[in-house]
Amino acid sequence: MSKEIILTGDRPTGPLHLGHYVGSLLNRVTLQQQYKQYVMLADIQALTDNYENPDKVRSNILEVAADYLAVGIDPTKTTIFLQSQIPQIAELAIFYANLVTVARLSRNPTVKTEIQQRGFGESIPVGFFIYPIHQAADITVVKGTLVPVGEDQLPMIEQTNEIVRTFNRLYHTDVLKETKAMIPKVGRLPGIDGKAKMGKSLGNAIFLSDPADVLHKKVMSMFTDPDHLKVSDPGKIEGNTVFEYLDAFGTDTTQIAAYKEQYQRGGLGDVTVKKYLYEVLDSLLGPIRERRATYAANPDYLMKILHEGTQATLEVAQQTMADVKKAMKLQYF
Ligand code: TRP
Image (cartoon, rainbow, N blue to C red; front, side, top):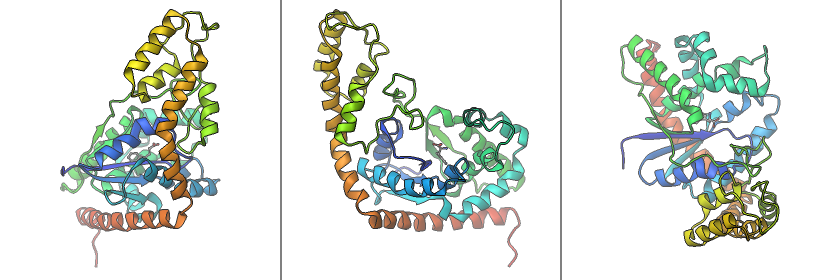
């Protein structure tokens, strides 16, 4: 068991999809064998741009929890907790807010992009603007030293470490630990429309919870080579989403190589390869879907897992908070 502590999480704004599966879920299933791992349902962060829609966040808590367990995140190995139930995170965030300037936050590339995407214009909610500070609190509250995230989250790690260093210097302490990003080797999975990124809001995602017929429909509608019109035409496999998925999920490399060769030469139809891809994906997702359905039918069990994980996290958070308050001379009684 490594000494490193992993903290990672997701905003519960929708069920998880194949992009999450290759980007983070598989990684977590592996990492839990070797590390102390916390996985956080970032419901407060989800509210920063869904504050008018608490039902959406609430209902997605159990969706995401079911996804976690269905892919093999094991609650006896991984501590799964709810961000909103750890008040120390909010406390830390307000202390850290003194250490970060508005100018620094405005330069954060992730926040900049997200502000544009959401079209906030001049009306950026303060809660959204400061979420990197809150994220630094997520990580440091459990003294996380490793954060497995996508590249888009690197500015968050940088911001966290700036806060950690400033805090430790100002308050002559080493209670806060610097953290490292752990970028997974896997590439980003394109959406079924061939766009660079799979996303719920982009409408191009295959969800872990998709029933078999929905999966089938999505695969049959996937983007291929737009110039491959007749079966006999030679086709391109570069930028062909079906082949990119086969590379990502297929196990029979001989069969895949043969299909690639035939497709490029001409004589292999899209429908044939898509049917094959459907089989490949369904053999992966079928068992996940089944386990997921069992968990989803058992909300009390899911809630119990979240409750236990949250209780365990609270104990660690209380200790961190005591150390932080001591360093800040906020112990009075
Ligand atoms: N910001 C992350 C996302 O949008 C979710 C998240 C919140 C997170 N707190 C975190 C990820 C801490 C890693 C560590 O996906």
